[in-house]
Length: 187
Image 1 (spheres, helix red, strand yellow):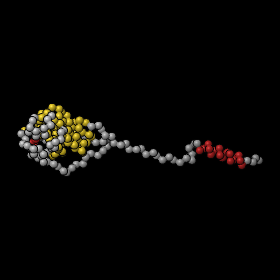
Image 2 (spheres, one colour):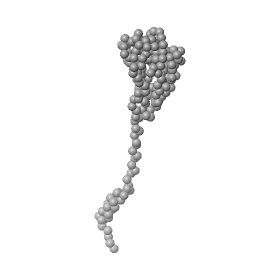
Image 3 (tube, helix red, strand yellow):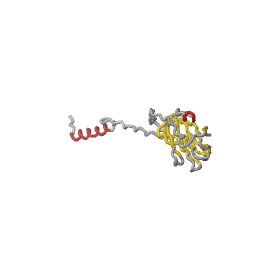
Image 4 (cartoon, helix red, strand yellow):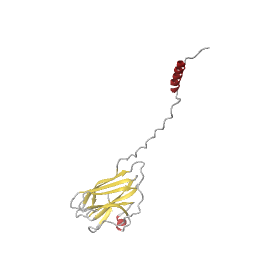
């Protein structure tokens, strides 16, 4: 009968333990790695309306409709030739004409009626996609050649849009600096 050396048994057990450990047995399960949520991406600004050389006669108000296809911020800039003239700007929500504006039937989104600012700028921080109307009033004593640009900075993809506001402004800020002699659509 053979006897087994205890040192040999220990060496054999150690060899088996090392070999079986490489077979996947005995290891603890790994924790899943969370996938980070990507940050919303902000699309680039879009020029939605632009023109140079539109004439607004002294004492007149002209307007033009424009449409945005996404929610975001709207920045409108109107500039003109003569620094002695005063030009004012209103933006309304929806399609609106001067007769409706004069009758306080338009929803005014923003305006700039400074006597010293040149150019006039209107910023609407949070707007819904839709139709808007840009009004330009020339209260100066000379006919004006105006340029205008309306830029939309769309909201980030995945961001929530603007909340509907119950606040509606209808008071027409035009005509306070002098009589309005006429009106028409801008080119």
